Image (cartoon, rainbow, N blue to C red; front, side, top):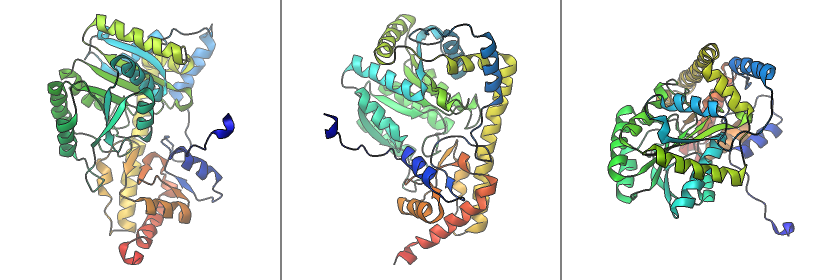
Length: 403
């Protein structure tokens, strides 16, 4: 039976990571995988996380199963972190999930199972795994334009016009709460307000992917778009990940929240989410969720964690600025100043697939074919080499040279 299986294509991001690992060049630079790195290229464990783990190790008395929906203290803390006092907690059906990916899959599958042929609209472009997750869950995926032709700025009018003409009552609209992946291009507060009113008027369901809280403008500031939408929309989905802002990549810590109209509806939705979890992985792991809960509940740990998130965000911003200024000095013919207005770890550079191939083959610099880079993968020590390589790439692949 198994000999008839065909070879699946490699993941466009993880496949590059594998190629990078095999690359023997000592000056290689990986800007493809979405992992935060410090200036020496390490993804270190946060000090607040190490302290929380130490406390848990000394006090933990059981490795028994969690409930189907997860660790209660974690879910309470997550609701407050994401929503504050904006929503009555009784209206929120929440589950702990295996990362943000797990939240997307469980919630999407639950909605598809209850609503039948549901549609979800995703931005073009969006995180590459969105299509696979939603389609596997049974949702019909549609796309709305997000970037202008320049591929470095938001096409808000195109986005709104497409949704106004084609989205139907009850459709789900997938939105990145902040730090849009892969472009780094976010909506302004005023645009969020316009979108919020539109979603309410058209009875469309906002479906938030919230993976980078704190990496845009700040932990509280990055919830503003979400809160604006919730002011006018009584129903919403929020899928959160704590891989980035807690550095808990391998612990797979996420949460799926469904905001409903009332407590009775919330209880019904939670029962369906739990049934889906039970048929999938039965119940989630404790360790990562316990770390998050302890940090968010303890004043000293929370203060230390918030400072660490601030430091990570500041490093990303400093790398953006250094890249732009170094490119300006190295290759003034091309203005990369637009990167300064983008948010989070990722940015669209305007580089094309041919240029991405050139950088990988000729200089050992790994970026996606779309031109997306992980800004957090940059460092002071590699910046001159990176920018000089991009300058040489632009010269080698310019139309004049191609002719």
